[in-house]
View 1: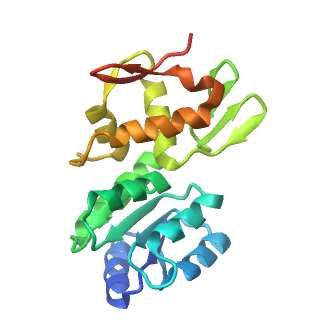
View 2: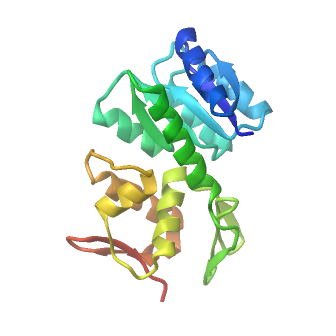
Length: 221
């Protein structure tokens, strides 16, 4: 039974999400603020977190940042703010999905299911390119003896590019496949993630190649 943490200072919203989640077979816990959420994440094994942005004290972005220091746990963010900047900030901090309030509880459950499916269906076989080793099951990347965890969207981008080695993928294809649904924002968000991913890959940055006017591809020579 998947375990869900619902983080929101609005008790009525927490109970609404909890009701729908339990009907769909999830085991749920609640946290009314960011500090409680971090405490629960550090002490309990969750499968996914639904995290509100606008909370007093530690807001959702700060909470996500703290979670990402130690964990690649899938996180879906909720917010009453619809500005594209907020969405990009959430994704750059490592959010797996982003849903604006007011929202349909059924849509939220569908997105939870999609994120879990995407994160849970990774092959456990290692992908090796020279000293670059990618482990889909553990979502870990090694270069030689150096191991590091990529932010979730960067790892998903890398894995999808690797799974389509030598194929040029457009920004729209990457947004649709990696985010798991049609994304209507600025396709340049892919460029931001690719730039950060290349910085993380260091000496292997050149395996992600740009095809000008089209998109990106993974190619190891």
